[in-house]
Length: 132
Image (cartoon, rainbow, N blue to C red; front, side, top):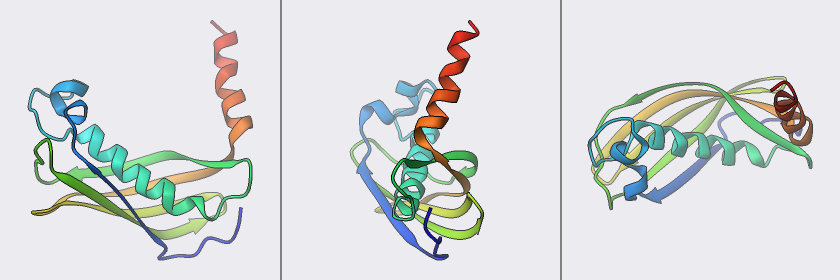
């Protein structure tokens, strides 16, 4: 892992599609952007923000997120999230993230990611299958 630069920012954006609605992900019945889909966008911004600091064979995994979904966004509207690195301790990196649609802020979060060796991480997870 390379040295993490605080205040590095990255944006992730997309259009809200029907499969992202609360009704489709079963987190509610409304046909608006679901909280799980908003959180996925926020995590993606943090993932992309950290990518440039990773060495070959490394990835990052989310270990904590505290999010607030402030405003509903309809299907068809563009949304984006901006992640900012605010702290780094060893392999652990902390982010502040804000998300927006064309009408304003729709969510905010604090998020922690940990840098891991990708293959080792997956191998360890797959060990659980042997316990079944």
